[in-house]
Image 1 (cartoon, helix red, strand yellow):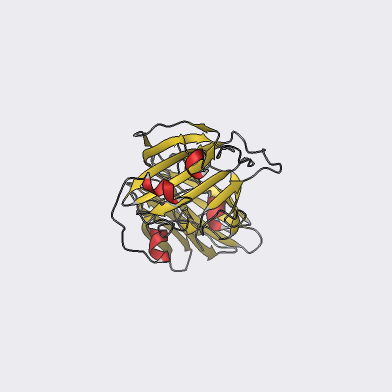
Image 2: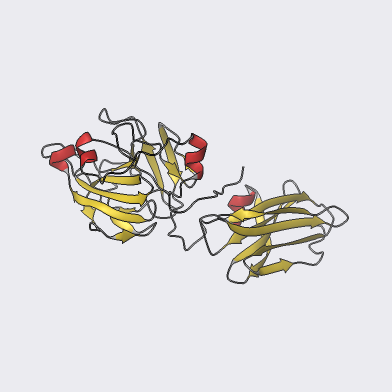
Length: 307
């Protein structure tokens, strides 16, 4: 299964902890519920931590939790994560940045409105780096992991993350979706693909799978790069075209692979991060490969004969 997501910009997420917090939120019409499949396709959310970091999320360790709320940690000691950066899961506008401890035990809280009734909540922060009314981009730091809460409520450092849609707590709590995939409730360790939109979060090896190594590549202007990979264990070639621009937004991308004497195999469509993988077994034969991103195209001659 390909690690890519056709993400639709401008839609985002929210979750919940206290009814009092809901009253502090801006009113919005409660939208019609989406199917789980539609919610996945309608989100452009990433993990609320910097690109490449792996975090353990758990939704049922706290008796105060409602369904789908997540506490995140990655350190092995209670306060190992204290001060680690927290970033925006998606672009939006800050509508809450304050200490809410006496109201709902959230401590330092940031809430981001993503439009269309969706918002995300980041609670127990040690430091808040944003102010109400500020526009933030996906991947922008909004605070640091902390352990702030209500007076006298002692907790260990962690990030409490929620997604909510519309009004009506707790019915407005939604499942968290990261990189187009629903969080593996009740607990999962996941790696952040929140790369700020400037770097493709995937590598050619991740796209093709274990055992594949890059043996050739060709630049597609500034729009992307097409890669040819080979697996020594099974004799298969693999081609992927990795985007460098419009990351997270579906745009036209193509990858193809042709074994000499056989029909060309092509993957072409509107993809968020890459086209492919396209596989073909070619022991002892020459291959032609290439792809397209933006207005740039690459077509190789028949080459790499026997590899």
